[in-house]
Length: 296
Image: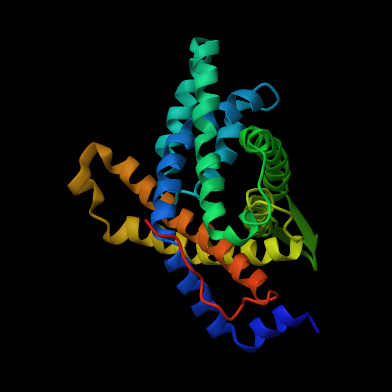
């Protein structure tokens, strides 16, 4: 009904997931995720500064930071407040940004995308063997993606502002006044989830070498998004109830907690890519051969 690959996954879901996990381990997925998380930690603040400075000319800075803080919780649960505070402080002193500092931020904001592309090359090694991307394309992709992220965040901020306005309204139905705050909250959550799936799907479409089918990218995007939804709620619970990170690391608590969240997020991101890779291999003649893996 859905094709041989989908039929196989639906008929043998446990076998397919075991296959993906085995291939992920063979490709040193945790090692690759550690590299992506480290460079993401270096990139996230310059990237957010660039987006906030650019969009503050179009939107109210307070509304911008409020929306950014809400959805930053999806990436680094429980740790968005210190970052938002630093961004607000930077906005108050934006006049100190010179051309050299601006170019430095642009460079560091692109590092995570470059490392992510290299990690994807390991997972999609069967594509790299067939197609090779020109180095100029690889150099331009991070900056194009940063521009698209800024445009996407502009759209999300505008939609979130409309939904918050709706939440302050009420409707009269059956003689009673019903507040729309609950509906607004649900719509904001669904907006965040849809944005998360869209962002992950776009990563899977752009980063791997060669042309990837949209339905395959959606398979990885939905898989990674659902796994992250469960994981981020567990992280929030852990940081608020059991975590003793502040006792051990003191003033470095925020950096350690952010790095831990990014490490887990990068692992799930690359695992979603591995799911796509194994899904593709189901349609190839070598699907029954075990992956060779990545050796260090």
